[in-house]
Amino acid sequence: MADKPVTTSYDLPVSEPLRQLMRTGWASPDQSVNSAKAEVADFAAARRAKISAAFPGLRLVIPAGVFKVRNNDCDYRFRANTAFVHLTGMSAGDITPESVLVLNPISGGHEALLYIHLRNDRNEETFYRDRRHGEFWVGPRLSIADAEKIYGIKVCDVKELKLLLDKKVESIAMRGEDSFVDQNVAAHARENDLIIALSELRLIKDDFEIKQMRHAVDATIKGFADIVKALPQAVVHPRGERVIDAAFYGRARVEGNELGYDTIAASGAHACVLHWIRNDGVVKSGDLILVDAGVEVESHYTADITRTIPVNGKFNSAQRQIYELVLAAQSAGIAAVKPGAKYRDINNACMKVLAEGLHELGVLTISAAESLKPENGLHRRWSVHASGHMLGLDVHDCAKARSDQYLDGVLQVGEVLTVEPGLYIQPDDQLFPAEFRGIGVRIEDDILVTENGSENLSAKLPRTVSEIENWIVELQK
Ligand code: GLY
Ligand code: MN
Ligand code: MN
Image 1 (cartoon, protein in one colour):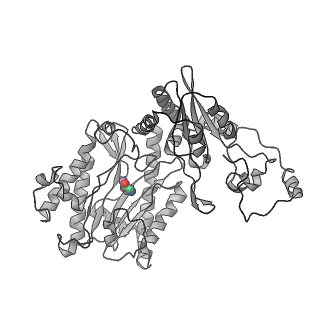
Image 2 (image 1 turned 45 degrees about the vertical axis):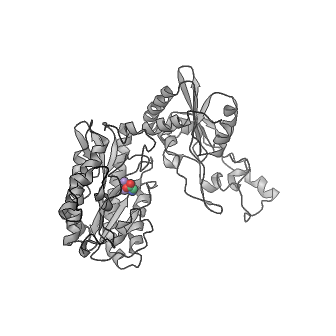
Image 3 (image 1 turned 135 degrees about the vertical axis):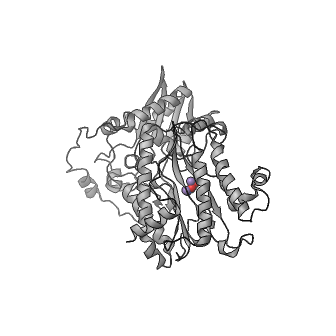
């Protein structure tokens, strides 16, 4: 925690007269409460109540995290720890680094205490000298009164956190996010239980979260339209993939907080590199371009959508064959999403269609049934990744959930997950005829498990061959 202003070697010295001048001449601070309670506040309180019930009598310390250095004295844009976001409901613009949520045990449960950096007093030198926390540098923070009103949590000065932590109560901290917390809370045998509980708490989305997911998906769909509109510029630029990347990034920043993850803009054979995020290649007419991108909105929820589209607006025959096969696999995967079904059914449904298609194409020389046996899995030469994951505040949400709740579990109403099969025929793959080499296709949508089965949240984005071809014509008119 910064007690002294964070300055650098090239900051100008401050004379005593300037120091004095900076203390005077400011209007007295507005003490009124300028904000209304946020819609998320009651949802976040209900989430905290569940964690409270799972850890009776224990103090739980959940840091928002600290700045991460990008280079020298420049930090990455701050993005708070996901568990902190989930339990406080705070939106991106309201969270400052070094904030900490404490669930402090009291009789009958826990009291939530939110420790934040307070607004700078104009008497404090940090106001204009601290490049990390001074409001002259980083902008005004929430007042205690406003933060309490908006989020419905008791708010305290982060400078007083040590006083609380020094009052020894059996405590569990989420470690590795904030060295101050790590140093001031002793290790506890149940740390991993807390991590698991916080991850599993996010499996079923509440109504606020589903609304935010819809918002993230809608912003992402707009970003995909921007991509299609940018294709003509991408084709004439030596780093056309960057033109696509930048088109989506603009939308993410305008509509949301950030990207939910680095965009994959993979043209031609780059689509066969699963995490192609260099995005520095050409975009050639006649090739496909695979774009995997998601807008993270201000509440930190992200979409995760992939479309593979023909750069010149028309799939050729080989491209279309592979695309139709992946589309059929994805449709089978989406059809497998329903409450009570096994999570693994989704992947199995996708893989069955892919294996059968690869056998029909003559490249999988054993039967699909043989290949689908776990001890074989030869079809996976062309499809090595899983066909989806949970989605929410993290693109790969709930990753610390136990396998009986997730990978080996049963689908439940309110879960949001991706279905994203793909086929990737490497450019040097001698098992496929030449016209297929270098084709990579993935189709990814965001699916909500509902009482009746599922809802494709990203259904408005064109998905079939004809829808995509017509969409490109419409947007490039
Ligand atoms: N964009 C990462 C993923 O689809 O999982
Ligand atoms: Mn994706
Ligand atoms: Mn995904």
